[in-house]
Image (cartoon, rainbow, N blue to C red; front, side, top):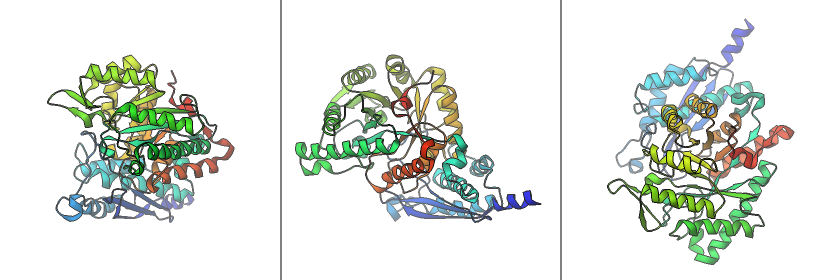
Length: 436
């Protein structure tokens, strides 16, 4: 009888969806789940700007309202289709719940109900179960051994689809590795960010410190090396050593500057072939302390990813984002072909927490690093901070140490570190190293 009563506590009593605003003033789906044991979970769907074409489908209304970005259809799908089916299910049965939603949708890319409807519900269910137990989400998902605070890859100069400048490369990141704790790493990164602001203002004027979608600055730069030099100079100004205390990474998001008709990449005012772009990456890795390149070629170019992995994969991370879109079948193809050695993990790209965890495990079993990631359109939801710790990925990408939707994740990681106390681990540069 006691077991029955305990099980009843975790049964889903109520699911309610609404629209809220994301960081780009666009609506998104937020879902609240309540269990019979008064556990409450609330989660919101993020949204990307540069999206892989194989991502799960984000359902939007079209029409005039919100310039077509409305989510009333997705909200209605949660309230009228998903909620009645999930009500009464055990919130701890995450896999059963997620696959029930996949079954309800019954499309290859979640286009009927909308991945935004499904992912917000999936995450809210997990949070409600955790709250019913009285546990933080990371501990509920990961258990006793979830204690590795992630090394952050922090986008502090924005280009490409995230800014209004002429930089083809979408993100220029710093990685604060010269620290023993996450909180110290965050301090180092913030100091570099502040020095970068001063440097850009001196060199380019006040408008250079306007920020892009992910909190990084969007200065009037044109060439890749210009941005990398600015990062190196700012690291030095902050009193740290580039290549030792702070490393660099880039997200090329090459699909955004690939011209399919010409089969060329338009970057730094030049038209480059795949082989020429590869040579540019090799030069940049020699010249700067770059330890990770994300999406170096367009999203269908597995062959290009194979080439750069052969050339640079023993030295740095070659990260597939648009290439893999958190999809286990595309990841498996990459593993078979030797394309990339790391994967960016975005929960809304695939649409459920269960599928996300399956992809992270598949990556880990095949010696691919997994980097838990935000989207450029974010909310104050801190789920990914917990997921990074829960799965011990050791790496997170969630923007600059600025803008509330970005700092929400960093601040939550500070709280998690405090909660863990002496059990907390910060790997720093070790988190970037392959284990085999």
